[in-house]
Amino acid sequence: GRLPRTYCSQCNGSPKTIRPNWARERSGFSVYFEAFVILLMKAMPVKKVANLINEHDTTLWPILHHYVEEAREREDFSSVQHVGFDETSRRKGHEYVSIFMDLEKRKVISVTEGKDQHTLKGFKQDLMVHGGHPDNIKEFSIDMSPAFIKGVEEQFPNASLTFDKFHVMKMINEALDETR
Image 1 (cartoon, rainbow, N blue to C red):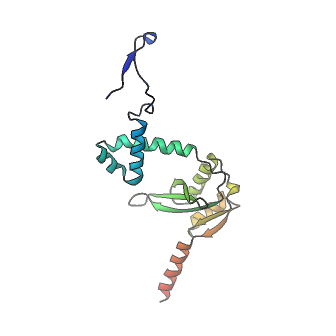
Image 2 (image 1 turned 45 degrees about the vertical axis):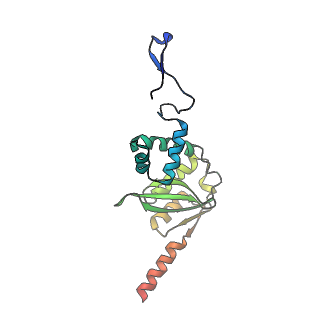
Image 3 (image 1 turned 180 degrees about the vertical axis):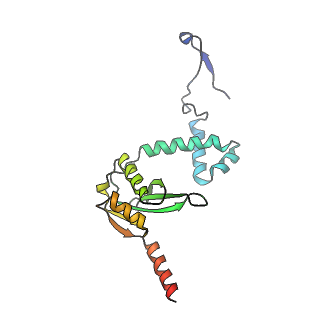
């Protein structure tokens, strides 16, 4: 139901909605319900969660975005030294995102639009916003993309490059197939 309202005599009699301690401001849901929805969204697509709880997905996305942004604000990248990254298609077609991972913690730390050397600039900015520094990065593990190589060399000149095993083996297998 709706939250109770009261009328404030000091505010020209305008109505004021009470602020319950069990809900986030202007959320419309209790924090317990939001926690339940977040757990469901970790296990299945948002659209399926919306169907399951008889809500529209447009009311659930803001919940997810709120808690993701809140968690991202607390991220600390000051100890990040070894980074792996690769691109993936975001949608059918040619819309790509580059995913950056702290290889020591085995955790995704940043996602940047695109798949060229400019994505390294975006990652560098995100790294610094969260307490990291480009000089602390010792190593990048990447595919053999000339754009990625150039981006690392420009944005992280102190880092060494390691080509990831998957892409090296793919190249070896393609060369072997061609030789056969």
